[in-house]
Length: 476
Image 1 (cartoon, helix red, strand yellow):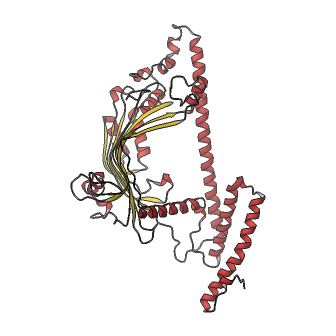
Image 2: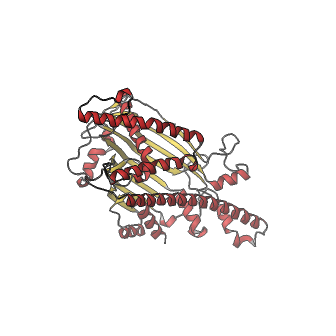
């Protein structure tokens, strides 16, 4: 039963990021014990959930290990390990209209209406999901309070059979209970809450040749090692069974975490096609040890790391650091309980007020930052490209797949302009325009008409060779 659940969730959540997952072989591996997958390629759409103008050019997951203690499930943590995670991203290719392609106005309007309807359904679904989660948390809290009241009114002998749920909740954060001492839901919560995650040899790199004309921009994140495990209220590693998801405490340890940003540095050149590279060739190109700064390197420029072979030089925004972060997440159910019980049992309410939903504390050994003028210019170019993408995001589904020429194509683009302005007005004040907004629109219209007339006059004059009156304000 549990083997099938583990295989299902592995295939569900990893299948959208990794290529080459076989559900049948994965199920057999989980049933036998530890799961180990090697040299899996990342899908090009692995970053689409971030809603950024980037795509995966190439990527590799060297090793994925899942260690499940079947004989001590519910008493020992499940461990997930990722080793050699390499990702190379690049800008998305803009969608250019095909030469001579035309779009019918009626068809275009139908496609826009369908896209708007799909977006509306997604918003409604997200709102319903959030509402159901909050309602479920309130109902669970109410049921727990009623159950506790009933158990308090019963005797020790009569409540022995019906009070198993309360006994499990009061078991505390010690050694935990076995499979037969808790129900399936509590077991799943215990497994997820005590999940241990380990990442080693991570390199995420971005290469861009279009945001800053005439310059090659590249940046990357290096991570030597990261581990996350559950801790108790004193920060010690522990296996917690009591309300572990309602009050989640994690300790995250970082080693050799750095960020670099290069301007004018050549891109990585593989010896052959990325899809044909061997695991060793991937390590030569993207191993964090080969991209780390030289020992004693300061400022932004860093040489190669301590690994053998060819090294790469980078200008680091953040030189590799090491440290630890303690993270606390309190669920809605816990906050409601703590409000009624005056934050009983937490001890980290931040001065007697309501405890925050999420809390993090970071301790670093050393921190070194550097930013050159070239890096600043390149970073601004990237941010401007991202701003343009974000500004056009609400209207991207409306953009016609044809060139704005004459005839039907021109009418389609005018419809696109109308729909874009209509949506912009609808997003403002819930679709209702104020008097000041109407005045602003009128002023812009009065400025636009003579400006557009001057543009047409200048274009006509340039074509005929006659002197232009565009700079005099005339609107012939």
